[in-house]
Amino acid sequence: MTKFKRGRVCLIAMIFTSAALSVTAQQSTGTVWKTTAEPLKEMELIRKQIKVPAFPARDFIITNYGAKGDGKTLNTEAFKKAIAACAKSGGGRVVVPLGNFLTGAIHLKSNVNLHLADSAKITFSVDTKHYPIVFGRWEGMELMNYSALIYAYGQKNIAITGKGILDGNATYNDWYDWNNVKPRKQVKARDLLHVMNEKQIAPTKRVFGEGSFLRPNFIQLYKCDNILISDVKMINSPMWNVNPVLCENVTLKNMRIIAHGSNTDGINPESCKNVLISNCYFDTGDDCIAIKSGRDQDGRRIARPAENHIIENCEMKDGHGGVVIGSEISGGARNIFAINCIMDSPNLDRILRLKTSSSRGGTIENVFMKDIKVGAYADAAITCNMFYEKPGKFMPVIRNIWVENVDVEKGGEYGIFVNAYKESPVQNLKIINCNIRGVKTPMKIDYVKDLKLENVKINGQDVSK
Image (tube, rainbow, N blue to C red; front, side, top):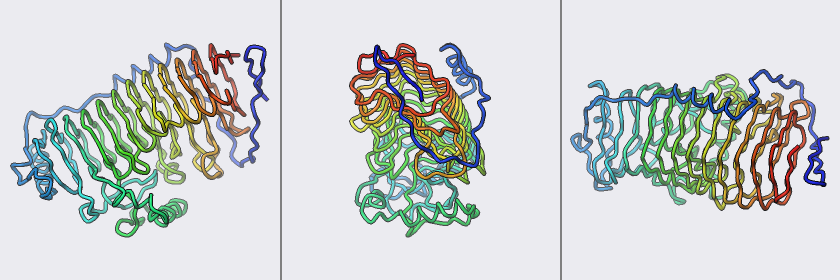
């Protein structure tokens, strides 16, 4: 049992009971940071690897392909023709001029930049017939389902840019009612997808769509490289907003993401490498940023971690979690950096949340968070939880977590919360120069190996050891 000194008061970490599993925890093999300079240097090396795609100076204006910006005419074919012409020519910009362009699914191709003129708007249809069945992921599991509103598979050098608006058009009368109205329509298909994942039914045989009520994500880019999304405003997504999967070299910057339906996460990169999320604004109905790498059997089969992610200068105005890693994290996550962010949400539960379980497994390591300003949160500032959802036989690992310069005006239930397995304690958790005010319970911690607290104040008391 671990003891923490708080002036003359000792806070004794609470012990959680846990069943022993057949799989033993992995031993720490990663580098343990000794100084702040080390992770900052690693972050800059990663930054140098991330390059934004460039496009030829050619414009393909959608109105030249029959599009009408009256908000009523369906322009799916006009988008398709303009994108095909742009790709065939070797690339350039498919330009959306001023107007409101209604469309079904937009499928991007290599070397195409979908560019919105200032204040131009793309509004997406709520008719499911306008979204063909494609291969993708849904909550970390592979399947055949409705196309994302904007989708690409196996493409390179693609972008969505410009100071326009992407309107997913979701309301509680259509997309959202699939999960918000009881009985929830999506439950039966969701449960079936879990069974198919567990039995490892071939993903191409996991066919959903009409009558299954599994909502599409707004943007899903699958197995694509060299991606840029910048400046656009996204509103009213049916589900997750931005979901690159198995992608490499991803830049997401200067975006405004606003949606308040069920599961309307902001940015959820899955099994991606070299990702930069910069200067983005989140006002969402679920996690602002949730980093993932596949659920259970699919995540282990594909075995692609989330790695080399930089999150910087973002504002989380509303959302359940600020920076979240998990829970679909069976492929693991490593080298995740979050710096200089502001969080002040009435619904914010946690600032940094690492959530996994022994059904997920996987290793979360090398997570660095620094210079975070927080107005208020409800649950815990820093959470490491290995008991999210059901248990299984795959022991999770969490190690090398560094949190520095987090300032909280008004905390919630806990300052620091750790719920780990005795067989797999959280390793090398270091918290430095943090000030958390107004919490009910400063710390609730069970199994940690090499916990270091330096100049950490909770409710005005120094809890360092």
